[in-house]
Image 1: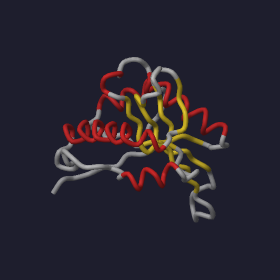
Image 2: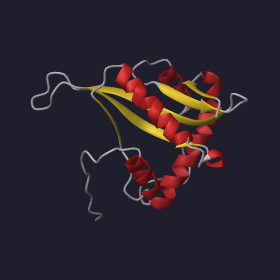
Image 3: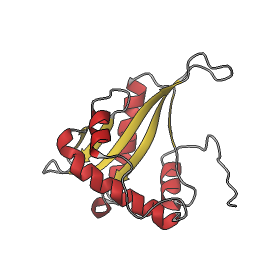
Image 4: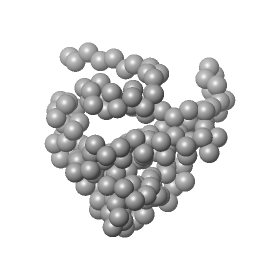
Length: 157
């Protein structure tokens, strides 16, 4: 890995490929919820996100400046909520490493980059969602020191 930097429009095709890779992981684990094909974000949405400071996207690149991973972030803050305190959160919307470069600590580096970014931005915490059936992701985040904040339960009808 060469560096982690803000995503650019030129990165969109590779980001789309990574989004497809992560969709297949989710589809494999929960085909009842996730389709085998499709896009979480289209090109227009990705372009808008790249220009939205409340939704920073960072990419990990190799020596050729080719994207080998990403972390999508979203700033969240509830102000004047009736029961929740006013805290600023950096939410990791998505984190993916190219299947060809997994096992090289790139995911850990992307996570730590987001963690340090959240600290620099004055956030109280860093949060994310992980599907319970994605045991690899759950173990990965636990190894990084993350703790469960809440559970979402389901009963399939």
